[in-house]
Length: 189
Length: 269
Image 1 (cartoon, one colour):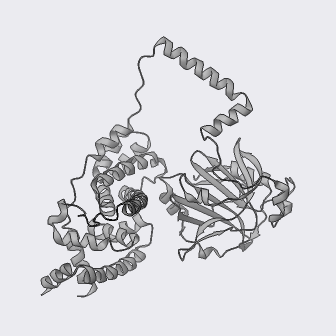
Image 2 (tube, chains in turn yellow, green; image 1 turned 90 degrees about the vertical axis):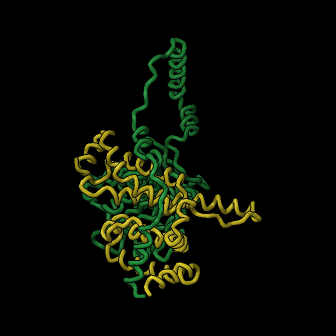
Image 3 (tube, each protein chain N blue to C red; image 1 turned 45 degrees about the horizontal axis):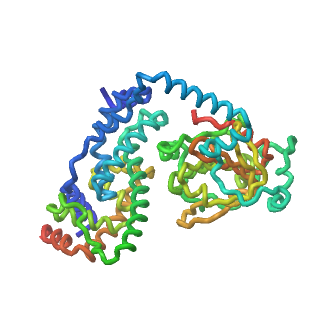
């Protein structure tokens, strides 16, 4: 059964039709939330909330459109709100425990993959809109058209924003992640 | 390294990212979509107790002061604003169009007013379908069906205010420099509700629920990123709430006309 048919059935309240749609898109939603939040538990919460909110709002969704951009858009919004509240919490925590070391590994499981992990850390130096567009395009491998739909901007704007984000990323890598820059240059040579 | 090479390398490294295993989101979601199971058994005592509580509650709801206190306690129909004053005589001169404050039934219908800000300076302009998609997880965008020839808004903005705030703007078809009215739709939890403290001229009702007729600025995001307290037009604002969503209708209409428009809101067909 294709996605449009499943969405139409889900709109009519058929929960059984919603499950295969969740299964089809849960990985992309979870991964985007994980990239934005850096915590698997938070990402799981956001992914669950995304699908529950989408279910409630499904009657207002145009069933002829692809579902994934809409879901990713909801997940990005929820993650952004979570980051804000987490940011406030962390700021308070930092004030209370200034003597505590600040550096903690982002994720032990991904530490083995040094290049990817360094790249992820470098991207976290960018503004949130730049992070989002880089994650969608290069990490989730979305085409430009779908990236545009998630961010509700024109395809041309996606390209120009990506170009600017990459330029900033290049500077961050050169300044703060010379190992990654050296490795890339080494590959080139 | 040129831009394309750099882009390809970033893409290539990004694809090597190790993610945690995706948890069973579908299982959780499906479980929470199930209808709440009903208790099969109620003891006679429990059933009688519940009946008594319901009768008592309904009796209290018939007494206006008690009903108001109960509704306020459980936050149903409460307009989420913090009025500074409710003295109409003291505050009326603040308005620029005092004649439209009074409940004059023969007031001009949909009279336009000069815009106080160039709309191109506002951040977050979208098409109506884009805005509907953006805010779909928060609330449906409702449009007035009164007056019948009003049509869709000429400008739609979605601004982030700890929740997606929609701003719909209708221009005067005979003079695009003037504005007929604007409708702000603000979700629960947004600071845009609490930041603005309008001067309340009088309390009223929209669809039988408490509403206020007020004047005052409210926070809007400009395209340069600044947040400013301002008004779009030189008029009054009708503020009311439906469930978790607060509505703010700004116009220079009489209060009666504004209420008619507020009560005509319907989902976009």
